[in-house]
Image (cartoon, rainbow, N blue to C red; front, top):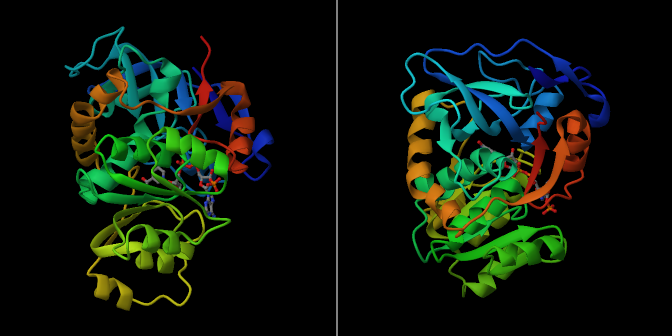
Length: 331
Ligand SMILES: NC(=O)c1ccc[n+]([C@@H]2O[C@H](COP(=O)([O-])OP(=O)(O)OC[C@H]3O[C@@H](n4cnc5c(N)ncnc54)[C@H](OP(=O)(O)O)[C@@H]3O)[C@@H](O)[C@H]2O)c1
């Protein structure tokens, strides 16, 4: 198979990859072999490219890619859910930047007929992460309020749509008015440009001092104090990433106690198969139909061919994208 292999991890993104012929993946008895039509970038891929985020056992550290969409080419002897020719999108432990992947059958979901492979490849990692974080872990309920940081990110554009489908009141932060306007089209109610406004002040004013029920945070340390100012009594906050850094200056716990708030962290990639399979099943039942009826949609910013994986990484590093950056795998 062909794959974008990380051959120069220490260099600039544009020089980090080379498309090479590599051995086909080994198909286990419960695996499906997928002829990949598209994969997509995630922030973790940037770390993996630099050699700072290795994949789970059984994956190559020099081939990134946490999701893919394509056509089932072959199935292992114990596979019951799929047959050759099925259109699938899958959550991967790695190695999505390739023309073939082998993945456990329970990591795959059907591609809704109205979606292209590029659109489908944009779904698994960020929609599963956002769904799991705000609904499964933070128990966001219909009509509650939620603050979504980096609302223009892959995770943010997924979260805002799913929260809007539950008629939540949605606050979101981003670094530009363009991203906030685009997120408003997806259901964002109150956009806050973090370069111009203090989000905690806006939320205090907009909620009459009550704060928000749920916070989805991908910024981490620098937002700790403002997040605790913004959270409601008995609010729930989940830390999904630490784009701004993982250290909290002058951290105190008193605000947490006073608010009786819950803070949790999460990670998708390192979970056991059974946990991921349970999540995928719930998502497939409750959320995938919303793509089919166009209540929500995958948000693609740009599509790059596989041999421009480096350029795609360089683009993500500029923070310019709204939604997903996709890699198209040509036949
Ligand atoms: N825990 C998990 O399992 C899991 C799974 C998937 C993703 N994640 C995490 O979720 C986060 C988002 O991932 P993604 O792939 O959706 O990202 P993405 O599409 O690359 O978007 C990231 C955006 O975050 C904003 N940003 C970056 N650095 C910032 C900073 N220091 N302060 C404020 N805003 C900043 C930028 O938008 P602006 O223009 O608004 O600044 C940037 O475009 C990452 O931290 C990623 O590691 C975690």
